[in-house]
Amino acid sequence: MNYDEALEWLFNVRRFGPERTLGPTFHLLELMGNPQERYGTILVGGTNGKGSTSAIIASVLQAAGYKVGLYTSPHLEDFRERIKVDGEMIPVEDLTRLLNDIEALFNRMLGYTERMPLRFFDIVTAVCFKYFQEQGVDYGVIEVGLGGRLDATNTLNPLVSVITNIGFEHVNILGPSLEDIAFEKGGIIKPDNVLVTAEERDNVFNVFKEKADAIGTRIVRITESTRSKKMSVSPEGQVFYLVTENAQYNDLVVPLFGDHQIINAATAVSTIEVLNGKGIDIAEEDVRKGLRDVYWPARLEVVSKNPLVVLDCAKDAEATEAVRKTIQSDFTYDRMVAVVSMSSDKNIEGMIENIAQVADHFIITKHSVSGRAAEPEVLIKEIKKTGTPFQVQVDSAKAFETALYTADVGDMVLVIGSVYLAGDARAHFATRSAF
Image 1: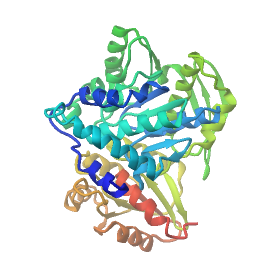
Image 2: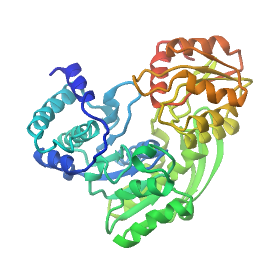
Image 3: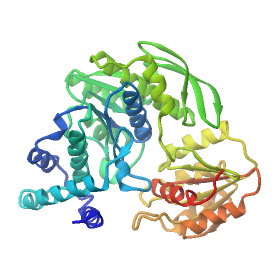
Image 4: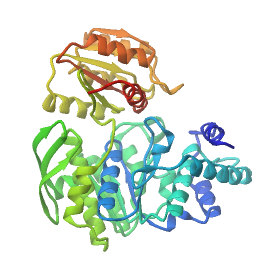
């Protein structure tokens, strides 16, 4: 298969289903020589902030001189964004070769996996693990895909597990309550190890604590072990200080906006300190450089200043609430035009309610991922409840241009509601003279 054919094969592999087990994933990795055992790993789960936290951890490790793999999902514009080594995407030829190799193994395993087949994410994860081995990475920072307990990434035995927080997501798969979701995500807690978590709610945290206590795992709870305060904000990011269990960091700089990103940074730094305690040499200077240099797009990313256009891939009610708070505290504008599209399995009512608190006008569109985007009528129903004016422009490129035409000098255009919509917007605005 060439590259396009390999991706087409991959995207035709089953994604979800009523049955789930890690058995086929373990078997596939065994056939590949268990590449995930050849380097140290950090496993990062949670509902929101796991991508930012993973990116910061990887950036700090890279600043310390280590060769670092970073595995995240989904991608914004290019599928290869999911698998990076020292910030560089996996090359087309390597991804193509590895998908061809796994397709052959996949076909050999069809009898073994007849009832509980390999899934799309199992295959991508196997590609990642093998590529990191081939590249000789020192450490792989691995973001959990969905849940944790039965996620393909949970085939790892990580140096440290991280769970950022718990929110309502994929309730049809993970369960209807926060405690149910916490149980699934808490599946990445490993015996006699360390869990770092920023979860604030005691009822959710206690799910983690019960498991950790039972298997002898220490917990670093960010709300109890750190203190932080934002000192200033500029177009380049924010300055803050952080006090952890082991150190005090003054005047840290991170090019990401919002109090939630300071929490993510505190989680990442606490994880780095756990790694330090395991004999991995990382200096304070590396922490500072890693934070300062982290690159994580579509998180309140400014892609144009005239007019001001901000993209965020917030995909649930908790994330849109964090964006709403950050916009109200850190951004100045006269009027906001919000371009929105949301996937149909999300809490659309809660997301619209949050965005409507800062938006003066909605432009409803559909992101480009077929079968995932909610129909405009669903969003219209919720927007009408808020009384905010709106219009519909189903084609996303036309929606972005309509927003620019609608916005006056001093106004803000906010693109929000989905990773896929943010990816569409990044590709669109890359063709314009943004600044």
